[in-house]
Length: 224
Ligand SMILES: Cc1cc(C)cc(-c2cc(NC(=O)[C@H]3COCCO3)[nH]n2)c1
Image 1 (cartoon, rainbow, N blue to C red):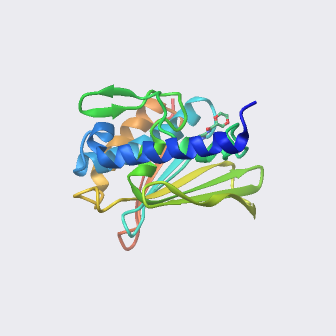
Image 2 (cartoon, rainbow, N blue to C red; image 1 turned 135 degrees about the horizontal axis):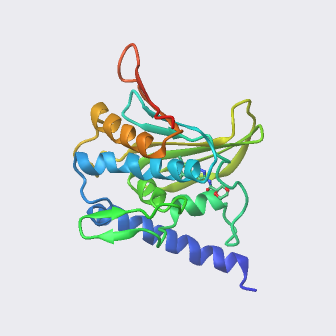
């Protein structure tokens, strides 16, 4: 049985190298760092919420553009696993910091393979000034924060009781030192989310823009 401590150290070096590789050559992972790449970050995270809905968990996904051009994506699924990974770090931290093989590389963009939770999430984390995850499972909320390209701040913490439905909320702020464009285009996101809702059928996808006053919102829902 490898010594957990040793394993942990090897892991943390691998994690740092992975995140650093993404920040050095972001185009290799998301195609570009212009507006297209910026919006691709959202689709990577939404894909994970869609996977959970496709697995039959959750009938609503909420996407919100923050006043600071951060993005929140909340699903209503089972919630990411809140336990420990064999390496000695929380499973959630592994999903959000370890580059997962699963993605299909084409020469100009990183295509996640559906059905693998968190395949692209670590790439989004690496390219964000900060990213937070909040999981609600059976009335208990857990949170973890990452800063400066995916470095964990502390670890996963149980933050207490939550009277919200089960699910996963990811909020992130794209790194302005990497992206030339950091302002989201509402219509670009709306058209993509409409398509996803159409393909998903019974899942309702909402898009809210908190940069507008009053907030602007669209609901995309195509019941069978
Ligand atoms: C918005 C968002 C972002 C990410 C990275 C994961 C997820 C996510 C992941 C999951 N579920 C899981 O990872 C687990 C839940 O337990 C069984 C196997 O799948 N639900 N939602 C949602």
